[in-house]
Image 1 (cartoon, rainbow, N blue to C red):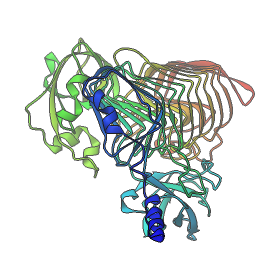
Image 2: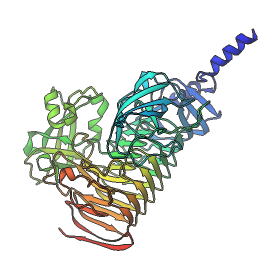
Image 3: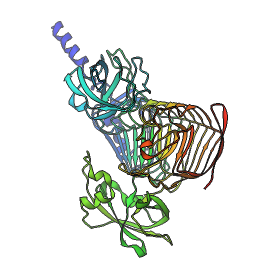
Image 4: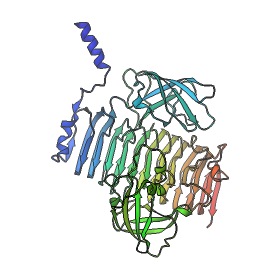
Length: 575
């Protein structure tokens, strides 16, 4: 009997401890029922096997009081829909069992392109649910991110539950090495997802793992805050001899289709598989003329109306930016929204693909062409050419301040909306640009031109070594503005009134500061050391030439005084 008990105990201990911890469903029920406005958690650990969906509440706070909430299913932990002034604070969020594993390279082929690997002790077995063709980050045996590698991607093949193989795609000249460590996981859902609503506050949260973004926000009416949150790898699992090397399978904070963008202050993001922060205006949208003389157009979008909330994005009185795609998405001028409504017009995939390039490619999404009618006050603006509409924030400017973003793949910040301040942040050991302001017009179709942004007093070190020194890189500096076009024969000066002031930038193979497609901007007071040393000129495939520590590409009206490698570097590029 004693031996049987020991065997049962051993089996139990090898499984996730889903029976321990307080019952989350009972704890949260009074909030979901609208009976409690302020919930302060009393236990140390709570467990759940399903997402918590919170809908239509106002002035509610969940105070974790230092507790941990563990999720056993691959889903959102919180989905918050159409809530106003909703706050979650003082809570740690993680998954049990873990949602990714990590491996160590044990063999490398002669050409350096095929690797074999072993799962590290204490980490989950290789199973099909973890496998996808993804971009990957690589760490040294001591857990330090390898910033010297080029861009790496591949799809693991399972040989046994503890061994695998992968044919990798690797840019650059630095090789993979025996003992290098790679996290493996498949994207699925964000830890926290908000849809609609306004005035969300996430404060003093610690997020240890996410299937995609730590916090994703869509269609917010604005005035949101993310304060003193940490997105970092969780504790070492039982039986493991190495620490975790991934926090999220996607971005840290990804915000899109908002009427204005959050204040993000005092946060730390590290070991993520993608950008720390991604702000994008959602999309630039093709305008199909219906009655051009009175400003009436059709828009065709790729998703069902119930999921995309287009009419909320364009309320009457808001401003938007009119563009011409046939002129490289050159700005025509600002317009005012009069009305926007779903149309009963039955749009086709061919019509969608004419204005939405991603519809032409294979995708995990199921495109559902949906038509809208929008009426604009275009004033005296000329309405020739292939017209597109760029949503603009309306309301409070964003602020990103006093954060620490480090040791992760991709960019520190990918900011694709106007009107805000980025100040007093430290960004180091990220594989792409530290701060990029830009327009993802082609393929991603996520955003447009950026104006009225101040970048000041940031410290940037050891960035951009994987992705910037590439002939096909349209992101060219540690701090940069960029535009993603199909061709670069004529580049509009669409970015405007950017102020890049008093930053300290060191150790990046691209430019310390690169402005592409910008006008009427200031670069001044910056101290730049050891940049622009890459063997490949970024963007040389597009005709970009003359890499410098401060590099102006198709830009005009730029002035300023800076220090580069100990010497004064003055700028005056007139219109």
